[in-house]
Image 1 (cartoon, helix red, strand yellow):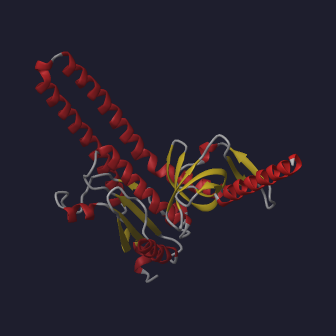
Image 2 (cartoon, helix red, strand yellow):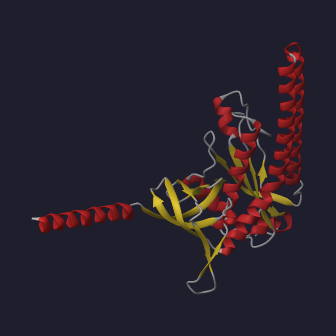
Image 3 (cartoon, helix red, strand yellow):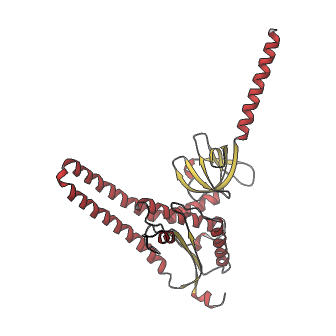
Length: 310
């Protein structure tokens, strides 16, 4: 009787282990895509199927191939930057994955660094503006707490400081716009505008097709052309979030042109994250705001080459 009970218990334990193993196996996920945003240990990855959040942990192996063999070198997680194309394996589902391994190519890392180099100047200026604003706001809050009678005056001072910060942001946008307009030796040969929903920076399948057509036309010139990218946001939200959102939109377009359309790095004008500046329509209406949530992509060709009939 005791032997039969022991045998039954062993069989039951084996079945439980098999079920647990099967459940874990079913949770294994593989995928590939491009990092569009990193927040701490969470990576937002744009795949062919949509957007996936990939979480890295201290146990996640980050690696890239070495030579022509199957050897791989492990590196630090600091290389996981926006614009990097990667492959991941881990547990979860199509929307949320905890990564066991992340693999990338060195060439793709170089492209991602180029993208970051183009976007960082505007981001640094915005960070400087926000540091100034936060310091001034903290001082204003202290004055209000110390003297209620001076509340109206303190608010007026704060509004002046915000206006000064806005003027500084507008100056950065104006400078970037001027840089684009100084391409006087070039003529426009094609253009496409990508539009977005509120808070979105992903590129739709239809817009990807149009960008691919523009890129194909561009590389056919072989020389004497550049592709100019400038991204914008509407006035919904605050200045900081809109500046970041326009940066993410420009970054996504540039990453697609470089990595999926084979446009050489030197043929893309440093991408412009323009924030709320240069609205295409009024932000007071729904239709106007929808026109302002955009990324303008323009193919410019040298006048000499364009005039030769190429």
